[in-house]
Each structure stands twice: as structure tokens, then as C-alpha cells.
Length: 319
Length: 304
Image 1 (cartoon, helix red, strand yellow):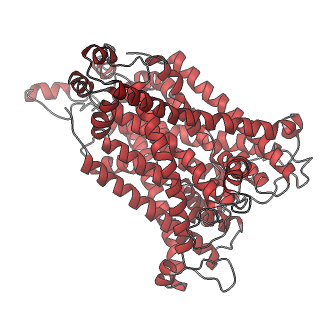
Image 2 (cartoon, rainbow over the protein chains, first blue to last red):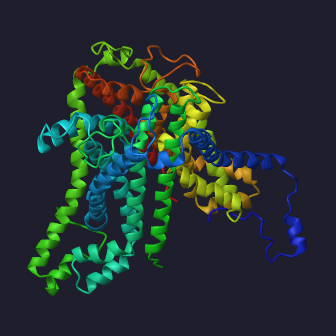
Image 3 (spheres, chains in turn brown, yellow):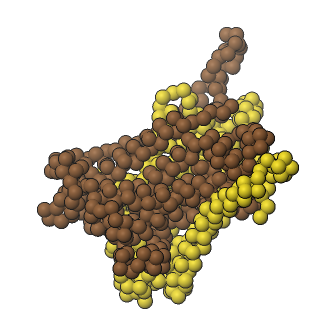
């Protein structure tokens, strides 16, 4: 570690030596600055506490009015209507469906790009190609929303699947575009994992007569599996939390369906819609926003915990 | 293209020489490589299609009137001036808030924190976890505490800036820590051995040497804040038009991504053109910031 144990461990020195090395003055200023720096670091913990308090406050209010079972198992979601229904399944399933489409698109493409960069690309082409996913990652998500509406649906999906079959707003376009959005996460994290596989393993396999394809598929990929899976799961959690792409492109109509050509509303899209509607503080609509926020937070937390478990399980340690 | 890899010497030569790979294997191997390259090529293709789509749609409105006019419900007169000024106000405020805090936290964690203490480990773990929280959740935090609730600042510059600051702070801290970590321990030891105190070491050795890395990381974090829309949508709304530039931290404001979102969501095609032109401005700003970050990195980065 880089932090130096400045005199924290006395070591083998004699008592006399220790005394001669003792600070000549108390240096209160030093301690004060250290305290201030610590407070700055502590702010991150306060942020987490703030998030939890903000989410829990509204959520508890919400469940005082709506029974827990109605929320979790109900199949109709019309919370902003008078006498609305509060069954969260339509928006939960829409989130999972759209994220599912995204991961199906992004996992092979991202992993393929990572394998190419780590196993095939030469020094020079690496230098040119590596920024491509990074540039994709730097584009604001609202631009992807525009891309879904102005290009993916009218120029790709509707000609391909038929005008009558795909609406202007549909879950498929949002899923595909979120897929594009998370390719860079998978590509860059997987590439890190693949590049970390010791060169000796490749050399050994090649010396035994394996082809490069075999080295990539049978040696490097299995060795880097934990990192690759972690990249998938991280991309999944990013997809679940994505808001701007789904808020317009997916159509924002909460319905319980598995047909991706239909418009849908995800949890994040609902949060955005509720906020846009300017709900009065303390109203049921306002509290619903926090309840859905808590569910979103829990789902992403669950995904992250699963990712840590998976990584531990598949980790191969090389030294 | 010829594949030159880190595998030295060229790995295909022995295969050929030993005759281990049959011609069928060589063909499938080649196909596999092409397939992998296609995955990367797909990313490039998307990038090209996306940019050309935006430019084709936005070019007719990409002129000075766009930045001179205020947002309007009449598409031909609609501009983005207040959103651009809002973005500038918000980003400067975010920089003022996050840079000192982020650098301070990074210095503490790298130079002072005793990693065997539970509270220091908690802070580390917490920063990593915060980076994985969906951005819309920060919006909920901002809504509950800054926009409404205790501070009750409404959709002001300060509300947006505070919310985005909390969002990018973990990113700033992580990149500053990397910059500090890149400084070799010998610099610290040398400084301490010459009688400098810890604080003097930090001020005269660590911070000056960490400036390029910190600047690069901070610019990238700020460009993330410029493009974020979801949390701003929650704290400041997205449907109303703000037709005046912010004059202080408490004035109502909107930012570029929100104005783009607003125009994208309108049914008339003319608004789509304005949205595309505004996207061009947004991408141009981000491009300039990234170029600046790369320039700083290449010019000032030291190899120890």
C-alpha cells in the first residue's frame, strides 16, 4: 500500500531512539487538516445515508396507504390516476424485459470486441480501435434516446418488422439502444480481465500446438471468466438503472406484456414521469415515486451482490 | 490486416512450420478473428450512424440563432440559450463543489487513512458502491432534500449542481486517488526524510505532482455531469420552458440535456431538428472537454 506508517510502528529501535524521533512540537495545524480531509471522505458515507433516508421516508408513507402485497403482486399499474392501482409487476417486468434485450445484444458484441482487442489486435490497431467503445460510452444517454426515436425505430425496426407491427414507441428499440449503451462497459471490463491472464498460459498452449482460436476460446476466456461475468452483471445493473433512453422511446405506457414491439413503462421511466407531473409533496403520487425508487435501488443492489458472489465463485487465482 | 500481437515471436509461424493446424482449422480461425473484429466494427458503425443521423437532422438549425434564441413553443424560433447558460452555471458550481471535496477525500484516503481501521474500509467500500447507484436515484435524493424538503430550493442552479455534485463526487475521488497513487513512494520518503511534515509533503510534493492526473480525471467527471439528464429531470422538471438566463445560484434553471429531452418529446418534426442541432452543440462541448483532458494528459503526464 502506498500509505506510509509514519512512525506508527515503533520497530526495533531503542527507547532512546524513539524519544529522539518524537515530534518536536504538537503541530495542531497538521491534525486539523487531517480532520478536515477525513470529513471530506466521510461525505460519501453521508450521501449513502441520505439516499437511504430519502428513499425510506416516502416508501414508509406509501405502504401506510397501499398494502405491501398489492404493490408487489398486483398486475395493473395506474398510480397517478384517481383511484389508481398500484401493482408494480408491469413496470418491473418491463424493466427486466428491456434489460434482457439489452444484455442479449451487448454480451456477445462486447465480449467479441474485448477478445479482439486483447488477443488479436496489434499495438497500432489497438491504439486506434480501443477508444471506439470509450467514445460510445461518453455520449450522453439523452442522445441515445433521440437515436432510438429518430433512427432505430423508423429506419431499422419498422422496415424490418413491418410498419403495422411496430409502434413509434416500443420496448424493442429501447432495449436495443440500451444494449449499444452498455457494450462499452462489457468491452472495457472484459478486456481488462482478458489482458490480466498471464502470458505464460497463452505461450504454453501455443507451444503445445493449439491454434490462436483455441487459445482464445479454451484458455484465455475460461481463465478470465470471473471478470467477464462481472462485466455482464455490471452492465445489467447499468441497464436496469437507465432512465433517459426508456422515458420516451419505450412509450411510457405501463402494461403487463412480453411482446417487445409494444410500448412499455419501466421503473425508471415511471420515476421520471411522476417527477415531470410535479406531484405535491406528501401526496400518494409523490410517495409512489419513492416506493418505486426503493424497489429499483434494491434490484440493482441485488444484482451487484450476485455479481460479487459470482466473481468469487469463478475466480481463478494466478500467481 | 496483419495481426501483430504481444505474443512474440509471431505465433502463426510455428503453427505453419509444425503443420499442426490443418487448413480447415486455419480457415475457421481466420473466420473467428473476422467475427471478433466485426463486433468491434459494429461499435464503430453505430457511432458513425448515430453521428450522421444527428448531423443530417440537425444541420439546418445548426447556426447562431440556435444559441441566440430562447426556448419557445414555436419550433422555428426555438433556441437553447437559457439551457446553455444554465449548463455553464451548473458545471462551474459543480466544479467548485466537487474539486476541493474530491481532492481532499482522495488525499485523505491515499496519504492519511490507516487501512486497518474499520471506518476507513467502510469509506472505501462505500465510494465503490456509490459509483454503481443508478443516477436517477441521486435525483430522488436531490428531490427529497434539495428541491423540496429541508432546503426547498426548487429547480434552481444550486439544486441541480448539488445533486450532480453528489453524483460525480465518487468519480472525482476515484480518479484523484489514481493520480496520487501514481506518485512513487520515494518522493514521499525523500520529503519526509528531509524533515518536511506530512502536510508539507502533501502540499509541496503530492499535490503538484498529482495535478495533471487530477485535471484529466476531473474534466472527464465534469463531462459526465454535463450529459446527465435523469437526476436533473427529477429535481428541476423538464416540461416547462425557462426563457431567461440564470442570474444567480437560486434562479430557476434548465440544462442542455433537459432542453434536448423536451424537444425530442414534442410531436412536431421541426422540434426534432432543433433537438438534433442542440445535440450537436452538446457533443461539441463534450468533444472539446475530452480533447482538453487528453491534451493535458499527454503534455504533463510524467513517467517515474
